[in-house]
Amino acid sequence: MTTDIEAFLSGDRPDHVAAYLSKDATDVDSLAEQPYASATEDGVLLVVPGDAGRAAFESATGTDPMAFASEAMATEGHVDRSLTDADCPDAGEDGTHELRLLFAFAEEQNEDVDGLYAEGDVIHAYAQCSCGTAFSEKWIAESN
Image (cartoon, rainbow, N blue to C red; front, top):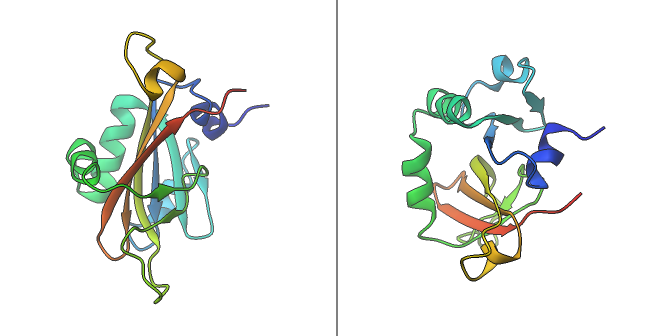
């Protein structure tokens, strides 16, 4: 049986969004009890239909997800394919950089354009580190 996050990461849920919220970003206890949520050690991972997911992200964080994505696009970084970890591009040797927020969506393959979009469904992930740095990464979805 495929989980919601596996279906999302394989591009099978282009009408959904995923969000990771750390315990430092919001009260994750009430979110973790929802049927669309998966509790993690440091937060909660949500996979929710698009409009409801964007609204849930904004409600939990006080941040418009599209404004967040626009800010994060300016800096490239690495987002773990689990969507629950990332490597901050501003991380030094101090080791205090932890994923605080993540918002992601899938875009279906479009052979009419060049680059990644012609190769397959693309996952767009926008992240914020505990230091405040926002960054993004996109990759081709993992096919089932």
